[in-house]
Image (tube, rainbow, N blue to C red; front, side, top):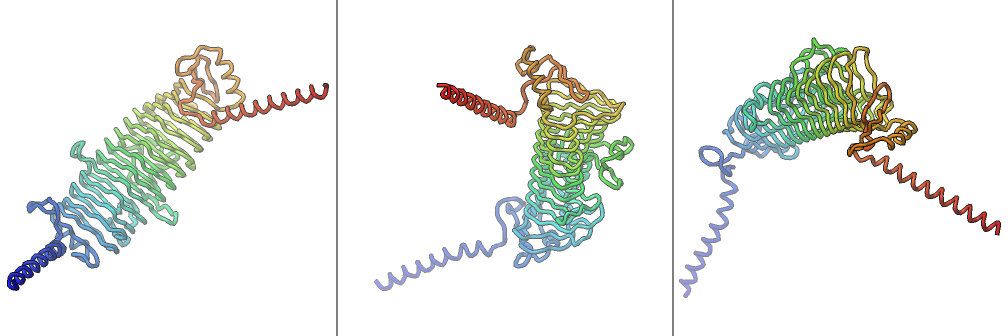
Amino acid sequence: MKLRHWWQTLVSLLCICWIIAVPVRAIAAPRTVGAADDNGVVHIIRVGVGGDYSQLTDALAAAPAGAIIEILPGIQIGQWVIDRPLTLRGRHGAVLDGGGSGTTLTITASNVHVQGLNFQRTGMQPVDVAILVHAYAVTIESNRFERFMRGITIGDGAGVNGDAAYTIVRNNTLVGWPDGTLPERSIGIAVLKASAVRIELNTILAVQTGIAIDDAPRGVIRGNVIRATETAFVTPLLAGSPSVLGATATFFSAALCLPAASDVVFEQNTLEHNTTAIKLASSARMTIRQNLLRAQHADALLIHNSTGLLITDNRFHQNPRAVTIGGSGTVDIRQNRFTDNETTFILTTGDAVITVHHNDFIHNQKLLMRDIQAPTVAWEGNYWKQHVVADWWFRLRAQWVSQDQQGRTVLPYAIDGVVDPSPSLIPYYPDAQATNQQLLFMVIAWIGISLIALYRIWRLKGVL
């Protein structure tokens, strides 16, 4: 019996040792999981204090294609190149510092993913970038950039391998200079001669230009927030100019316009407190929709020599100048809401074909300013609410004129040299302010009627 118990005890001890040893081996084994390379594993290489390598340069040299390089908390200083498909990600507190010189990270291989890192201190030359991309199908997301000349540049060779190979820049925060200084030619995100690029859900602050595009077809710019820049979005980027499309005569000089954006969608962005929100020159087939352009210091939208532009479903609010158009081309402005702008439209010399229809114009100080040789505008079906007394009288007369199902009347509306032959009596956007005013009027009217009734009752009682 004792021998049998001894044998059972030995077997139990061996089983316990085996159970403990398996996870220990798993922890101490080479950092490989999943399937990626020819051996069916993904290599995870940790860089920093306590990692596999202390320097990112050594890790990049050793990493096979498909590896994951994870930067541990701490600062890596230098400039690096990624020349094979891999993932570069950072733990909280991981910083790539360019040392104030040159470009920090250059990507020349496709299928690279950069995530969760803090980039700071690029060089101060116009060509110095925190991340420079010369490849397609690259994803840059959830990073933070500070003190850079250019945050991200998507250059030649990016996004040219078909619709499935979009280069994506998503959910990054780019703060050029937290102290508020705007270095000449500093840019948050630039796309230069690269197609099929998606720029989504980024926050860009304190740079001269937020997003710049030059010769970049099939791009999508969606859901970004851009504040405190000289220009939030511009196309084209003029090489060698002292500034990025100056807002004066430089902008309207055709000799300086280069082939720019085509087939680009710019939507659902918030542009606030910039000097100018959007500048477009020599652009074609662009759609600008569902954006908020609020409280710029000068212009919300500048357009010159651009054709096939659709400006729709945007909100222009409290801008000194909402829309300025010059040169040639075609511009369709429809179903936008213009509220509390100082000047809504400025038309400079040119022969552009401009249609403005089915928009809401509410409480703008001045509707139109134009040069002598400015293009004509076709106005139709817009909702007007500019002057309380004049609008009340217009609507009172329009009630006796036939209307269609959209509330448009054949009674023309004239203001500031603009004649809308078939204005709408119904706003295209819910007018909460108008509804509140109607409710207030009804309340005041009810109180007035009640006071008159009480007074009459008091008089009657006094007589009796």
